[in-house]
Length: 481
Image (cartoon, rainbow, N blue to C red; front, side, top):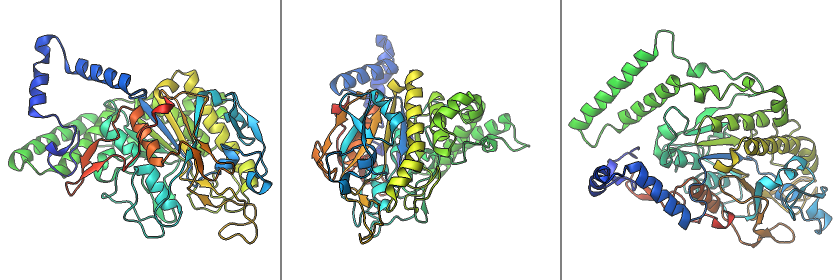
């Protein structure tokens, strides 16, 4: 449990004195706290299908925003200036069609579902920054410029979805609560946009590793300095705890910074004492044939790393597409999805072969290992792309490109109790606006929280002692379970 720059009694999940007394007497009746929590969870799950079905989350964030109409929501009957160059192909899920650039995912369609009616109106212009912040935090970016451009992250930011899961569903001791791999969130010069824990504190920031996983990952960050042993580090942690207790006696409402520092020290110690979480980064332990299945590129090997982190009991893993959100799309495995021009050759020859192979391998691998039932996988960009294909005279779009389009796009969701092989929601005939069951990005985050057993209506206190909801508005999509 953490305190958000205030006294412990402000957190909504802090037990009252009466509750503690009641729990203390449970053993007299032959019951223990774990029994009561388990029983309450079973009741909640029965009343709310899918609640708490997932133990882990893999959030595949497609930074830069791929074209939904070319990947997930083809419109073969639309005019050519809308439907584009790609044909629709059938999948293993009856009635579900994908763009021809996703043949591997078409063979995994019985393991995932699509939400084809996601959409919102970001504040200001439809730029990447505001849409990213909304998708990552579940809140409008009140501190952004009127144009929706990002500002550098700070401790006053609202926490990301991964940080919230780390806080309210802590990982087991000596495991990562929240890890981020492949690349950071980026718009222009702003790095880490919406990715950190913000006012929840640094102990819930992600453990980040953005090295190229096609090469051996440097694990020196987990090594102790030459003159420090585990016993010596343990003694430092014990001393820090004693100092915290002494400060609490002198100044009961103070000492938050030291407590946070001690918590991070304890997390580091527990990781070093048990090697399972660290070992997840040793991708060379995997058979070369499996690594080839994921693809020898940064995204594919990061998806494999995500699977290994889940096996090592990491609670939340974010795999972020490595290119900056607003980069000029270039050839190569790590290029941008921001296809304002040359949309079709970029998707066909560069972006989709890498993405299709990596995500399909991840879903198939999780399923084969029996991990998909307890792991929620969400893949989505910050918005979609415009239905109308650009011409030489189109504003903000070059020939053959598609512009930003937050009004309607698609998310892939799998595992964690979600029914597979289905399509939820529907866009109109041009994939321009939701036609049935509109879904806000905040509904997506509410669904993630629901799946891991966190009530999206939960509140906590910010640095000014104001109540804050985990999600500004929205609801879990119970229809998916």
